[in-house]
Length: 214
Image (cartoon, helix red, strand yellow):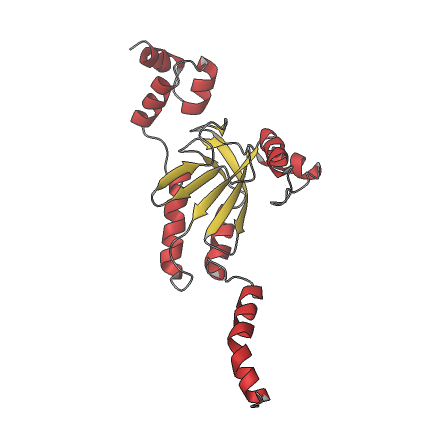
């Protein structure tokens, strides 16, 4: 009977051991480290007006996703937490180590500080109460936005450009709504109160009234 020697056994086991090592190794970060630091430095702590509606979290799935292809929601029926033209506070930018950056959004810095001081428990994906925890968390003026990044980490300049493009789909950055956009907003929110329309658009009551009466 021919016996398998140690060298032969090592060669047989090598592919299996390599596979195990690959599975146990931490995944590479999707966003290059310096790009991530630059984005955090630029955007964390800013108060920015929204170009889009942001929905609240009703499950453990991130409620709002933005990619180069467009904007998506985990559940179309989820309530809108922050509406277009509202100013929101970007509390944190998170690199998930895969293909996303995640923004944590609050209504204001004061609200973020208040809720953080409340020591809200963080939900776990394998926790059956995760959706309920997130929903309660969102109702307290916070939600998240997932940025889907397609550029690889070996292309930092392209990554930066893509992330900036995605952020400009969410916020007015270095720009303001045009008069046409403000007027369209008023027409689309006919049932909103005059004081709220005035606060969001900055237009005088007379102009708002004239648009509503068109």
